[in-house]
Length: 274
View 1 (cartoon, helix red, strand yellow):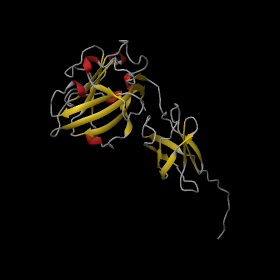
View 2 (cartoon, one colour):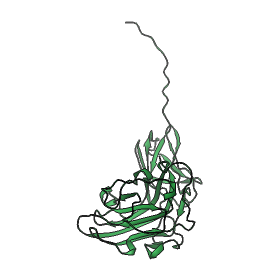
View 3 (cartoon, rainbow, N blue to C red):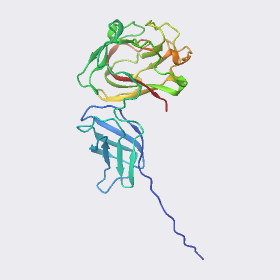
View 4 (cartoon, rainbow, N blue to C red):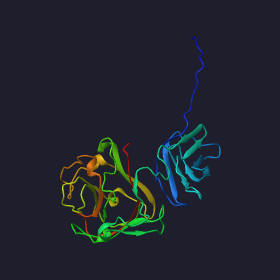
């Protein structure tokens, strides 16, 4: 029946932001922060502030997810802060990051062979690459459904470390991906646009991942995941940084039926892999 009393301090962590829905998004777009310890303040919300002290309108909040609107004036590069009942946390992903960008499609000078097109309506950062056209199984697409980005310097995009240290990252907005035909992406050291080559490729398909039409997001693909060939059944690997010179995209492969692809891409960049 005896007892011993001892004071125990309970320390509640500040918010930890583990991901943001996009590194770029237009003003007024829904913007999502995910993480933990988003303990709500007395008004049932939290405060989200973009670089430059620009405060966002928070539309919903839980302890792990906050949705807000991208505010007017959110054009500076930097971390986003979230203040909850027990402190303030900052995103490790950088809003409007400029790191590693090798083409933001401000001009179309590097769209070799007239592959792809450009547009600026409803963009996230000015002009963007626009891939659009009809998809069909194993059908070689029109130029409007492919990208041949020829590096104007002819030099590797990164020169230090191992290719597994890096990832390809870009913003995307899909209005339609009508069937599960993949977008095949690969790098090459030479000026040949040939999906039959042995350069390691990755296959990306938002039709199978899911997407919200008209909403900008950020896609990150580790270079270690460039590990197959044209059909997706081969086993290849990037052999070194010297391969990372030119970039290719081609909507090509097996798919169920036919459909339309309407895909915007912006801010192609090489970033450290996480």
